[in-house]
Amino acid sequence: MQSAVYPSLAGRTVFITGGGSGIGASLTRAFARQKANVAFVDIARDASRRLVDEIRQDVGVEPLFLACDLRDVEALKASIDTARERLGNIAVLLNNAANDDRHRLEEVTPALWDERIAINLRPMFFAAQAVVPQMRELGGGSIINFGSICWRIGTPDLSIYATAKAAVHGLSRSLARELGVHGIRVNTLSPGCVMTERQLRLWVTPRKQEIILSNQYLKRLIQPEHIAQFALFLAADDSAVCTAQEITVDAGWA
Ligand SMILES: NC(=O)c1ccc[n+]([C@@H]2O[C@H](COP(=O)([O-])OP(=O)(O)OC[C@H]3O[C@@H](n4cnc5c(N)ncnc54)[C@H](O)[C@@H]3O)[C@@H](O)[C@H]2O)c1
Image (tube, rainbow, N blue to C red; front, side, top):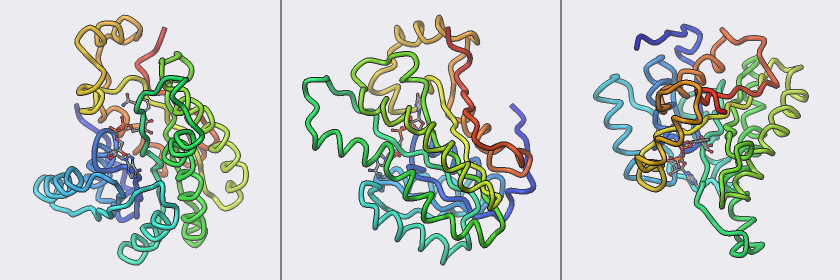
């Protein structure tokens, strides 16, 4: 596949949460290839370091990896400060990290509820809050919050994650309203069933792939790169007047 080049992304500072593996790794790669200055945070140190090495060899640039547990809001803010010091004001924020570990309804305690919200929703708000002054200095920016189709299609054993993912829409729209006056755009990007290494390892068996394909209008499996290509467009000036939108990339779902 020949992919688009977005000249407006070259030299821009991009901050990605969970950029070390899965869709996040595709985002890190895709923005590095656009010659953006990429910083990413992740809890997975080994995978993240391998990704940095791979991108250095393939693309010739080195994304900035900052080890950070997003459940720690102060650590997240410190990482955003470091990214600005090293790479300049952040123009694009991708709130991508999540944890979709399954749980049964009866297993949920208040502590588990808080912990899952602390990874699947809370960092999106506080990362946005922290980058807004930088985006205002730049005269604008793009925030992309990752949603999911799971709460619409009723994926089982995921009620906290699904609640957080539904809430992302409200977060994006309210921030878009508040920040539009500063030229800051906020959109939700909701992937369908994406064949990340984690999904393939834990849940997506060949039988599940058949079910996914029978549900999708397009009879091909979605790869992380398909999502990254959409994120590039939402980050670039090519989508300059697109804000408060919910964009779903799910190959069509019956
Ligand atoms: N893969 C799919 O099929 C799918 C479907 C719908 C939505 N999504 C959404 O797309 C986004 C990316 O999903 P993915 O499948 O690539 O996820 P993934 O689990 O494969 O990757 C998530 C990344 O976030 C990191 N992370 C997890 N907890 C963290 C923490 N506490 N602190 C810092 N980093 C942490 C992980 O190490 C990992 O690198 C998520 O928002 C997810 O909800 C994915």
